Image (tube, rainbow, N blue to C red):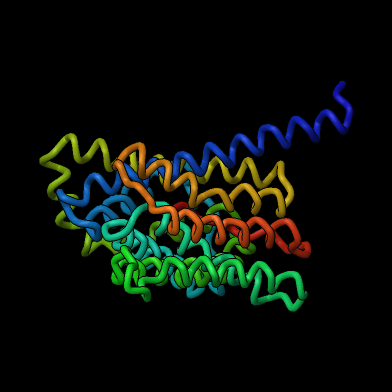
Length: 295
């Protein structure tokens, strides 16, 4: 029989692998989604992906087996609405700025929740690192190369992610893992006007439909399952530390699939935000687990 130390090391290894595979899957999904923008536009791809992801999650989770308490119905609607807006915003950002840069800006949303909820002096170091990274990325300098509209959409996605976490904390406490399935269904209903044209195009284009299904699987159903496995095996600080690598993995996925290249100053900004995210995770006070979400 394995000792507790051996079991802990085994869990850490599996959990770490699950997180990294989840991040790789989500970012590859985002990169492949971007290849569809010329066909149906960023809103169309976002709508198509959410509708397909909702179908996948509903078939996997079958949440209707457990009724939603009446007191959670409005919070669940808010949860799904922020999920829809977050996806629309980040896909609009992907259409205008590099993948890794958009993700670096987006992760400041959940990071802000952690930092603004603390008053410890060391947390101001992580806040300063995050702000420094954002200031470098924001197109306020004469030599800035980033599309300001794309940056604005990425900032909007960051705000939506923060609101998503706050809403998700409440509904996940009441209905557990089914919250994401129900939330994705609400998001699909809200975003369906943007998806109508894309769905019609996909029906007549097997290639588009197959890629969209792959995006929905890579960006939602598969990484969500991996995250649940990882959170069961890893401590919250370790999980947060691993998630801080998301911008770098996004940049690599953007380079591999789309040929996107970041400037040295953009890499510096991303690393600053990643350090802030990793530092806040390592030094965070114990908190209840909260849901994350796919890109």
